[in-house]
Image 1 (cartoon, helix red, strand yellow):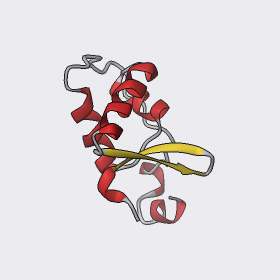
Image 2 (spheres, helix red, strand yellow):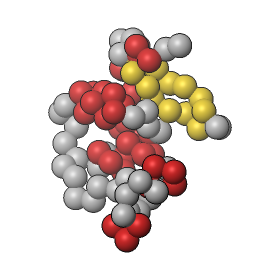
Image 3 (cartoon, one colour):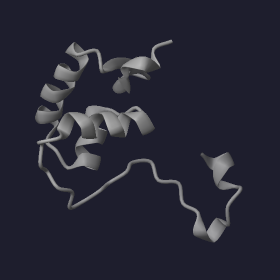
Length: 91
C-alpha cells in the first residue's frame, strides 16, 4: 500500500487499514446478496463485513453458512484469520 500511495500526492493520500461505514442500513432482507457483492470486490472477515454492512456478526455467521452450503462462497484461512471468498476464487 505504501508503494501505491507514493504515486499520489502525499498531502492528499492516506492509507486506511479498516473500512468503517457508520450509519448503514441494517436490513437483512438481501443480506446474502450484499455479502456476495462485497466479497467479489475483496475477501473479508466476518468482523470486516459487520463493520462495512452494519450487520451484527452473529447474523453474518448464519448467512455465510447458508451461502457456503449453497457453494456460493468459501472460507479461507490466511495469516490466522478466516476470510469469506467467492466460491469461484478457488485455486
